Length: 410
Image (cartoon, rainbow, N blue to C red):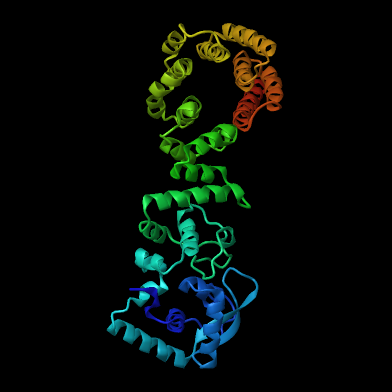
């Protein structure tokens, strides 16, 4: 049934009738739905149209106007209530609609609407605004979406989009795949230009829009920040990213494996190894060894590194294995040589990893004070992801120092 089956003034009557138990004399905690904006948003009409029709209804004695405090707001707003005459009209309209088979409930509640019938009543700008509101996973203010003459996007008392997940899914089901991808693309750009930019949401929409090159560039450019804020949702986003352009395969798979290891999802990490090895054999071997080390197979991890050409990552992984097996002097010697090598070459990409490993060796050698000096030095050059690891390690150092002091006092 089309939205135009009932005129706007009748739809306003039916809308207000849903709140007939609200006392017009109550000046506090009145629902926002009874304001001009609330009525316009609920019925998908412009605020101006709502104002005109409410004035007519007020002059005809079917509606009264009041000033009330709205739920969730401190200030007063104009609110509207049905009079006794308006309630009689509401019953008459309801009876007629039911007799004629008019589905008026869908006119008052978007989630009950036939999505195709609803979208047929919208122009392109309105479809775009409502579509973006439905494609977004996070609520944003209505004024961040394209403007429309009519209020086609429901909002709450604070001006934020207010559409239930069921309703979103219902409306998006009426769109074809290309239209949905376009909405995801628009949403990705919104999160870039928003007053509160969100890298994670932008990444999600870039991937869903099929803008894979942009998604890769975003991940690589902000990899430290992404890894620092790693969470279950971000991990799921990374896992869903499968169609990776060839030029970015090695770097993106490195991030995906690192995330999988962080979540102890070793089976997932292993599943990426063949593709990574095809793109970068050395990286594939290094991560294979790291995964074996994570599983506790130190000997197997060390054997895997035998045929690998010398590099800083290889040296640090060997030093880590030696530290875990108690060969602390051997580990420290490798760390010292590797540090000199990094300084001479000017390649300091693994500096934070070196500092963290060096502090671990110092702690195990019973020198927490040395570890503290190393970690404080590390903070000045660490990225966000490594910085989080450094602070965790600092906590470990302070615990070791407290324990040493207790033993000394005893």
